[in-house]
Length: 151
Image (cartoon, rainbow, N blue to C red; front, side, top):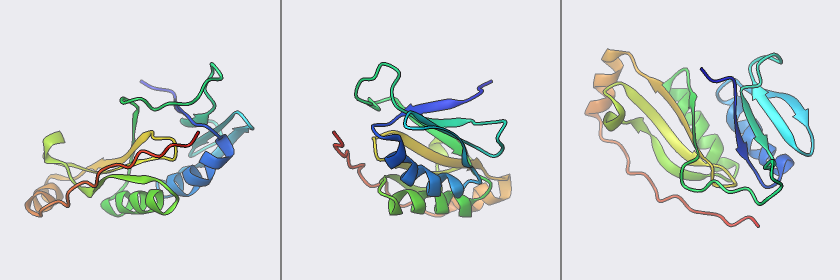
């Protein structure tokens, strides 16, 4: 259904220092650059599926309250690596890795915020056996997201 998704950032090269290591945990890399305006990420040069870019209207980038991009992960370990890399590179916590039974019995994910306040998630749907084991374990409460002012 979707060809690509892009999020607005204040400074593309600064944002890339966050996104390069975080998206690497999911198997994505920087595959196109239109500096200083945009960078595209994906698995192959032919498919830049996620973009960071300066806003088209040349105004201040804002995430508002609805920007949310969920990346498909290959395993629970990858979800954990994604979350850890995001925190290590300046992102803030939006929800520890763990089952999300309110999203479905096999939903497993973690939430973070990038340097500009865009909400990011790594998630996967667990096989039924793994999902029932994960659901029986208590999840850690989500930390309050810290809004960072980067003007």
